[in-house]
Length: 315
Image (cartoon, rainbow, N blue to C red):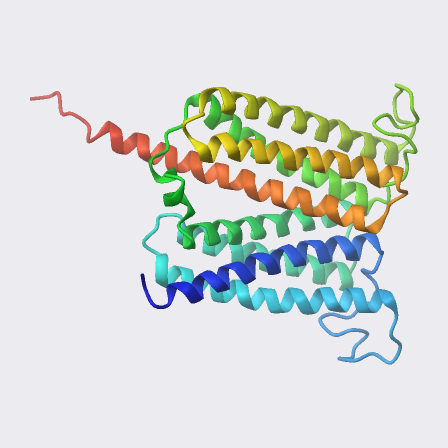
């Protein structure tokens, strides 16, 4: 093993945890309405490094900026070091670029929100963009730790049903994430007093906020059932492939925790800890689903290898 490899693994671990903290910090800023805690000033807080008046909202917003800045440096280091050390692995360079690109995009949207303000629909994309950067960092960490080799994922071949549904559910999961962020940014979190129905009875929403809330619940419910169906298929067809068999079981457990925490947000009247757990579970679930995407890509490469070179029939 390269002497630098253990250090690279530590950097990957720290950066992945750091990106998770950035995601939770962003959720905390939104939940506590601390986005304007530093005024219309960025990256400074009210035009100063240390403002004269310290408020809880200011501390939350400034802490989020500080953590994001530190983690941003770690992401740059990880991307550069990964490129140098494991650049021979096919996916490394792509993931390194994605991790940095979406981190920069996330920062620009955050800065634009503070300085000029943004619509709720633009701000809702902020969490999703952060999630893509987190997933890229997570996949880099997986490559660095050679988890693929431990699960024999480098020899995995998936059937058409699993490949198509994995790709489709990953795209749909991102859409569900967006609808959830839209619930937060439009202030529709507590527009419905009941769960799973808005007011305890089956009826159409009365206003835009109810449409946003119930639209998210409906979309999340479909995602939950979809993951459940894929898990059942994986259990039945991939008993000899632990990375698929247990991977989709874990995905379903995370989806179940996500649904449960979503319900508890309503029952606890927007408890902050529950709300942050809601953000944590979807982050972990989305990261896992992106790993399944990597496995789909690996499966296609393995199929091409097994097929061998094309036979020339013209002779």
